[in-house]
Length: 435
Image (cartoon, rainbow, N blue to C red; front, side):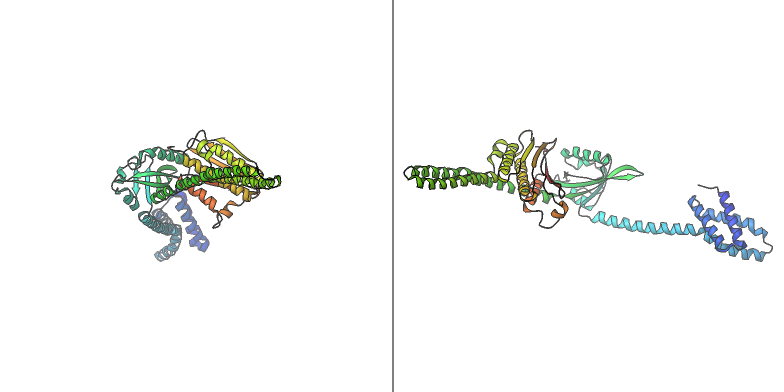
């Protein structure tokens, strides 16, 4: 509670009188408390000088001799210094804090200027308020030009809606947002960027956006190359699958016809033994059909993802005895590369289930969303510690790594949720923008 200056003067005078009367350290403690209270009430050193002066005016006339007055005034210096101790401590604290702040600002400025990534700030209207040297190099615009520019002038028009959406999400309370867009440099060259942003607050109110942008050109090239490569592998798999299914199938059919013709001229005992050969050929034909389907099911190309997954589920169930159910819909055909990626994802997930999960039931779900397709494989098996297993080097498995790479090439994501004793679910989501 704030007190009046007159009340503080009375307290100061009273403590001073106690000190002169031999109050010693107790009186000095009172002086310190008066100083602390004055500081808390917003008074300054000059106010304390005023208090000290008024106290002297009241006390010195009561001294009998000039010598007594001089000695008393000298003794009172200690009291006055003690009352100023809170101010000195605060001043030192501010000085140290300001020194630390200057060092922090210097470090931030050094990081800001020398960072390889673009660091920038915007106001809430999208006007650029600052960029670092990396921003100058990447955009071709100098810092003197930047404050006169809006993001609509430097980002590709097709991404402005996404930028506004991200700002709305941040204003709604989402702390960090990360997204990808393209920068149009001063020379009209387009640069793909991955951007992370957060709001800047002042007095509890948002006043701007701070962001870090990373040039992902090389990553995009790698993803495109990995996508070129996957398509080539799928084409090769299709060719081999066709050879297994059609050409090998025709050869086996010819072998059946030839054996049937030979059997007609042989004794019954020999014909029975030839039947065993024909049975073996039937098994070989079934295995070839299975291998052909696993390499590249023609049903995926002819009818689409859902029928192909149903056919895959039937094969896994027949081979392992584990019921596999397929639910949901793609609501029509998807681009071929997306259908292939999701099919391979489910194929690898079911392979892991049959090897490790000890599951009794498996559900494959497809869900078409506004701008994405999600595919999940869930089982009721033994589960596992996701962080512990996937975090160990080499434990992610080549199959799961392959899934992640295929999804990355399409801008998709993979998520695995599991706990020991509570089953496992693998979800893959692929964006459908511009599809």
